[in-house]
Image 1 (cartoon, rainbow, N blue to C red):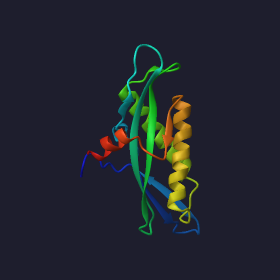
Image 2 (tube, rainbow, N blue to C red):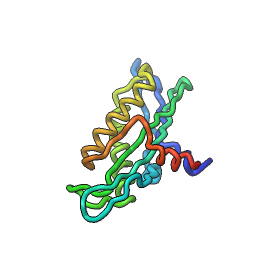
Image 3 (tube, helix red, strand yellow):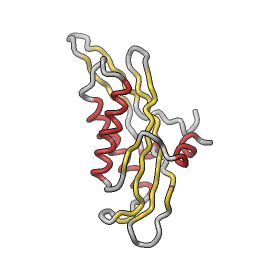
Image 4 (spheres, rainbow, N blue to C red):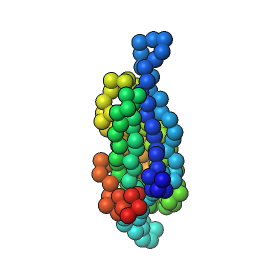
Length: 155
């Protein structure tokens, strides 16, 4: 397996045994190393600025065997007014923590009937909100920055 092909989350939607309800299980967690940020805009001086981007591909699977890859771009400033300089390792840790919180928010209320595409979009929205709350100016997008896409796929 390529070091760039990192399974982040595996979502299994299973029917409950004793009741007619369904349960959503999230297996695994997003690790800081899964966010392979590349510098898109260099940070200069002591003023806020600079920009990093990462590309995430998150597999989502159901117990029926159906599966999708939920792809998103994760962007974070290098220096902000409020936080100062954000090191690469801090950016990775913050984004991973926010992604894990977002997964709990997005996947907990789902059922086996929830379309996988809706799960993906719900995760992106939750991830975007939690990341923006952690670091002003951060964002989660549908598309990956081209430089982050290349770094993630190992080309």
